[in-house]
Length: 314
Ligand code: CP
Ligand code: NVA
Image 1: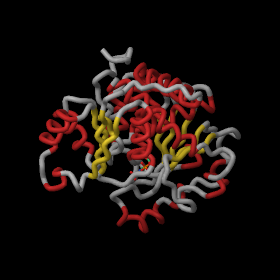
Image 2: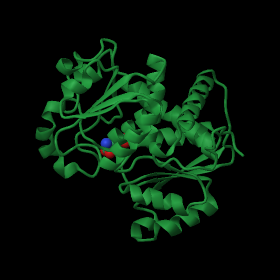
Image 3: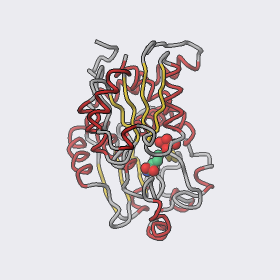
Image 4: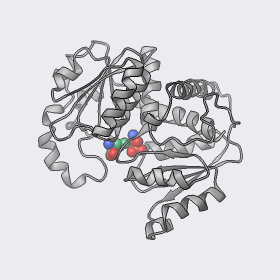
């Protein structure tokens, strides 16, 4: 049942490596359709009467606002829950929380630290669970990024995306997503800050099937050479605040600045999931320059997530 033709109905979105290529394509097609309808004032009350619980144990601007607005535009109800205020914060188990929530709501979106906590929640929940960011990955972000790249470049397959910076959650989801859809990805990180080897293995296996090239390097210049997209993220993610000063020194050579972007194609796109730190991972000149599409990415969080919710809960 449901509206998905690729079996997404009732399923979870925990990581892009668990999705099929045709499922990613379906999400992106529905996202484009919903965006077009919304711009033309056509309502799409696909989730009338349905409630999405949104659990946050980390800060958020885009994820919280876009999921909340997404549920409203789909005719449903978004229920914001701070992890600290739930009994979960006082030691109630994830399993019990999942089973209780399943009796009240129709889906759960969660942003938290340990990826295993989201896997545990999904294991015990009888309703779809959507990962709104963990320490390991950020699948919703990359679906919005892919929608943005398609809008500007008309395709994903065969393009080269260069990720420069920390081998973090966003980098992981880019690796897995690019490998699925046949987009070449080159990741430049300082030594000791490479992506998780388990993520690399999954990406390499998917790249074999899709024809994507996965490259890992310590040299930002090599990564961005002839790139269609340059992507970066903060050097200290949520939970790593104490390492911020130390990381500023370690990541200095990874700054995306005018000199670095010269190596990319002239019509390259600059992308960043936001929030950004101008003067750290990217200069103001680049992020506020003509090649930057960061606010399109932010907007597309809304449309891509509406597609995810409609396909999984609809
Ligand atoms: N990009 C992103 O997930 O932003 P927030 O942390 O503001 O949700
Ligand atoms: N890597 C960042 C992404 C924020 C959207 C973090 O986890 O803080």
